[in-house]
Image 1 (tube, one colour):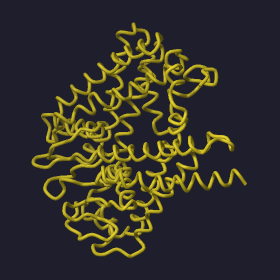
Image 2: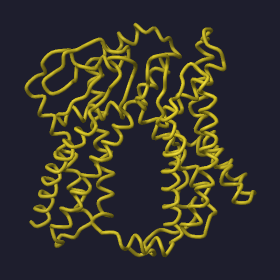
Image 3: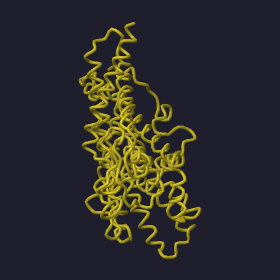
Image 4: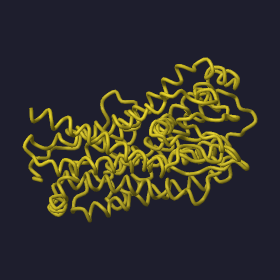
Length: 421
């Protein structure tokens, strides 16, 4: 892979460090960019950790400010400002992957959209910290480590403050938002910055990587995105079909205008979680909302559901129609997309073996990604019968892999035949 084929230019010219114009994330990006420009006047050993502090505080503000706005607008006289702040910090930690305790109940269902936002902000901050760093991967790694120290220290301090609130983060689970997530964001930032600098060591490493592996990354990304989009569309269709029931539950809660908006946002950030449940149902492995009553192709027994409006979109308890197993076409369709995309980087006369290998690896990456997302995003929504909510991650991943491979074989076969006509 030649380094000359990669675009050169400044970060601003490539747009790597800024989202698209008019993006909802513009305000976050602008705030972080302004802070990093100020910190550039400092020596690197001080600027990097302070950028980490600024990154964590910016991420924290995206949750704390809306929560405080809801608290003020709702006039929640039963809670103090200190409790509201501590609860907001805990919700931010939940978005980063932490588990929370509220009395005897556990909340470990991590909203995947919130997780994506926290991860994006962390990656953006790490990129800003490394914008002026040189010295190859080792020098970049040192800069990322300094950034990580600032980010982790700020997150740990926020978690310690939240321990005294009504919603307390569980200590062991803090490893994910404090260290794992920012470390992954920093590692990706180091990789991207090193690629921009055309580092010869990294270029040599990339050149030694199997071509079929590198070419599997794009189809895997598209396949995982298609999986989530199809699942989200299925959820939205069910909400539309059962809208009277959904609205009835919402109305019974009596959240008011501000509380209703907050409830809608809370359900929206959990849409990727629900999308995975929908695709697990389509794959045949089902999902669970109430322990002891899984929802699968054959139907489900029902049970007392939590008062969450979107869950009212579930079909009525009982047996499902005989056509429901045909929904397996959804993961097969995703597999066909992966197989079709896996041939895009190969010429018409290329051997079939590397294309098959690329498609198989891409399918494995999609199944692995879905499994990991479900492991992080599934969990408890309360106590007792709500202690294990979501799809059965390992079983879902295994079934999904098989269906993706079948679909990929079909997609790759169709495109190969069309190319040779």
